Length: 315
Image 1 (tube, rainbow, N blue to C red):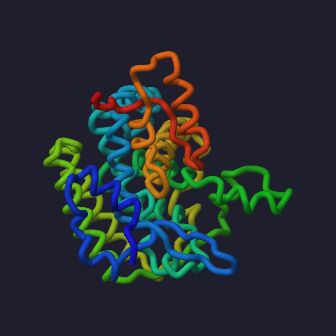
Image 2: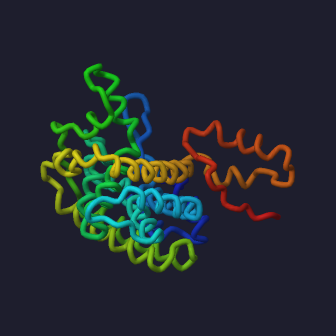
């Protein structure tokens, strides 16, 4: 089996082989599927994509951590007072960690009819409530389900009777049942823990970040196993009435945009990694930098955003 581009990018960041590399050919968990004529071919590595999403979020932490805190502070509800900005950031990192957890289901990996972001959102709400409380768990779950809004918009296009995205995504009649297999979950769990440990030792994650993310991962995988085979009604599990409250809407949309940014920057590793493209820019030619950046990024099928460009080491 050939090299997986996402794993290669992660390896370049870690400076060594990804911990699961020796077993990759037998346990690889697809992060997406490529359509080929009448079939779908599994591609990518879900583990590498998830870890790269964490890295991408940390790249822009200095830009978004304080504004996110202000947003949560301005939208407090009864029973929720905004904690310090670093604690809110760890909660957001937790959502990014589990945003694609629904892809671990047997149904997704076998291309059955399950929307992975719906599974991820429900599992996130269940797992995060005991850790961060009801308000935060719902806000993060809403952000996760929103980050793949295009999938639901496709179904809306088929019916003029569907008036809003919320009505489609959170329909009372929509329910989910999925299957899970122990081996992929165990492989993901152990390899992700190893990689997050590496990121912490490198200083890309703080010790407190690492501790919270491990707790979240264990709780989320436990919920994924526990709820396999159950009928999960989206509107009930995600308490959709809360989303009608702007104090839930505003922070969830803010977090959604950050998940969307981290997710897309990580996904660019499937082709030409955005960070590597920027490293090709001649930063000494001030009059052409903006045009060079535009040429390298505008043609990519991923939303990269220029909210924060990490410093490129000069040669």
